[in-house]
View (cartoon, helix red, strand yellow):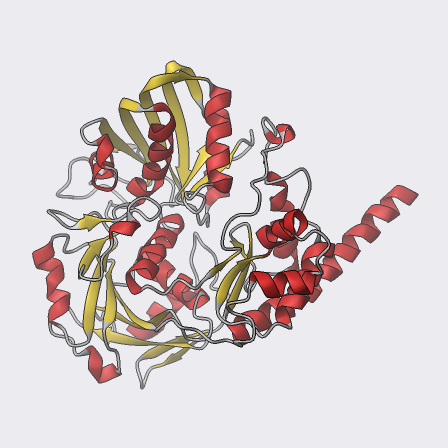
Amino acid sequence: MSQSSDSCLDTWMSREALAEAMIPVIGRLYRENNVVTSIHGRSLINKSSMNILKAHRFARRMSNAELPLEETAPLLNVLAGLELGAAAIDIARLNEKYKAEAAGTSLDDFLRAELAEIVGKRGADDRTSTDVVLYGFGRIGRLLARLLIEKAGGGHGLRLRAIVVRKGAENDLVKRASLLRRDSVHGSFEGTIRVDEEANTITANGVEIQVIYSDNPATIDYTAYCINNALVVDNTGRWRDEEGLSQHLKSKGVARVLLTAPGKGALKNIVHGINHGSIEDTDQIITAASCTTNAITPVLKALNDKFGVIHGHVETVHSFTNDQNLIDNFHKGDRRGRSAALNMVITETGAAKAVAKALPELQGKLTGNAIRVPTPDVSMAILNLNLEKGTTKEEVNNYLREMSLHSNLRKQIDFIDSPEVVSTDFVGSRRAGIVDGLATIANDKNLVVYVWYDNEFGYSCQVVRVMEEMAGVNPPSFPARDAVAAEVPASLATAGV
């Protein structure tokens, strides 16, 4: 082995040791102080040393180099000694701000000043916890459960208290727990799960979930389980209008309802990042629109703001869903009766029209269609747009990359330009949509943009963001504003990231 090889390995082992040492510090900040740490929005909670290293590597998309662990490890250690109150802290952005603005100030003094409002408050959390009930426990319901358990922290914020299902068999509880524990697409649950058949509960990572059997949303007494003023998340899709969903409000202990599907009538369809500011305390029933609407609306807003959209067509290449048949059989919908595992199936989608509910300026400007394909998860939306202003592929890609890194839509839009990515690479993405830069086609005022999206997990992340807005449980975030925005390095303009 050459001397340079030895040096590379020694450097790697040193960085790995730093990452390992960060894990207990991150854990203590989370458990004892209700502090959620991240790197440019990538959470560090419950991550392995390898995932921490990858998060630091990801930071190269913001600057010319990876984020040095030699800088973040001391920063975390200082944070751990400040007895902080609840907060969300982006250590990468905080580190950027320190280097840009500290001007000789010690790290300790800088952090004390920057986090003054929470220093010395040791875990204090002004948020009131909100009880959450998942009505239905299918694909989206189980992913929501995973996300809520992951965010349980010290018990503040959103608290998953119960799921409501129709009893399917004598061993129903064990089967429900098994489906939460194992998922063919999203992998195993990270943690431990226990079942108490006598109490009819599932306990996952310390979160006790009451399983309630019912087929009537209007007759459940949630208060009997000490659940009050609950936010009920209906992920069955059985009712989509105000009349049907208002049945939940008749049950004792329910305050508000969120539907994980497009709503009908005058119900607000919320796409987080776009129109979540329209949520009011008086809104009792809200919908989170569809996975496709969540994927395309942020990208369409970004493009419309800069180039202007005259009209366009949205074609979604969508993974099959549980509503299709595994083999040919009767289905009330056109074509959906044919085998989902063997066919591409043309079907309708309301996503193009639904965009206008969240983004009224695009009213009447979009058409849409869908093709269901034999994959279990991750879909793609193809946006074929006619623009007011002419542009180039390079300009569009640089703009969308910048939006994914530094704009208010960075939780919704991601960007990639690797020549090797395929659909399975986006399983587990927490963004609403991922622009594939290499596929962009621009011909003056004609533009085609390809947007990948995890129609299950990415959408579930958007639903949780809406839930947090409804409950008002977002902790204070630091730094309060972005550090000096880093320019996208020229080296990344055409490189795979």
